[in-house]
Image (cartoon, rainbow, N blue to C red; front, side, top):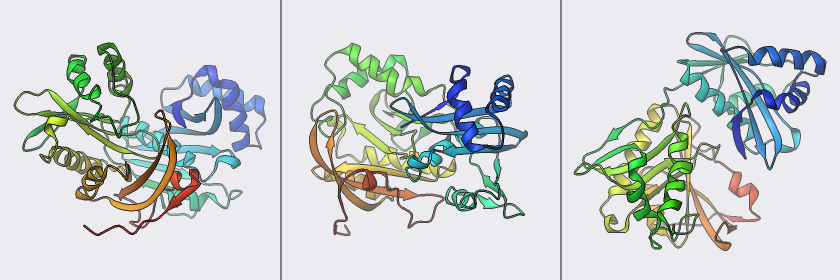
Amino acid sequence: MKVRPISPVDLDAWTALRHELWPRHSPDDLRRESVELFRRSDTAFFCVEERGEWLGIAEASLRSPARGHLEGWYVKPEYRRRGVGRALVGAVEAWCISRGCTVLGSDTDGDYPVSPAAHRALGFREDGSPLLFRKELGTCANTPRLETERLILRRFSEADVDDLYALLRDPDVNRFLPWFPTETREEAAAFLHERFLDTCSLPSAYRYAVCRKTDDRPIGYVRLAADDSRDFGYGLRKEFWRQGIVTEAARAVVFRLRQDGVPYITATHDVNNPASGEVMKKIGMTYRYSYEELWQPKNIPVVFRMYQLNFSREDGWTYRKYWDRCEHHFIEELPSR
């Protein structure tokens, strides 16, 4: 599932879903309006697609310098309750924040009785009327520089390819990661661009190089996935294991995420890698459930434990995507320490 901006080449697909959202308007009228909207600088449009199919859309505009507005969002019925709406609204929030907004407004139509509940589930609150909603926004940034006692957390740069290669080619480091060890420097350079540098143009992202203050060279990374899982991941060169470095870096990023208004994070670890679970517990995450899947691209069956930390949602709320997707899921009785 991928969230991306809608462009003029998407006009037909966009118009079709707009007509599902606003069936009282003719497709021709909606198409003409869409063409006009593309010419404005105070609007944004997003879609979620999976394997070439559009699952939903969202539209937003600026109502004032500090207030964005969710003009409409729609998810195909067969894809509801899968996090599509959450991903769309998250993209709108990031766009509004990048334009300096501190509030996101929205309104509902009486013809859609489930809409108020959907708004509340996404963190909106009533704004003077049962059909009007607002949500306070954080101040997200793209990988803002952080420092701890021993570490600098910063964006990766082209100059970091050799240090990243040293991390990616180690089979011990990559044993529990969803890729095979990198065999060439060129593969490491491609990984650097795809996973880190290509996100620098996004309005909001957290893709950190973890560096020691002594030389400012990357020895690991911490990153937050941009999709609705908000998967929190990390890696560290083997010679720096068991020094508390990952925990120190992760705590700094978690503190920033809380400040920026990120609603929650999740993380998973292989049951055969309990050390990763200890990091999750040390930064405040709690175990929610376990699930088994055929792990790709390594094509092996793996049991994962899913941890979660809520910042602005009810503490009991759990992200269920893995639970719902995997036939084999269960809750383990884990020791408290």
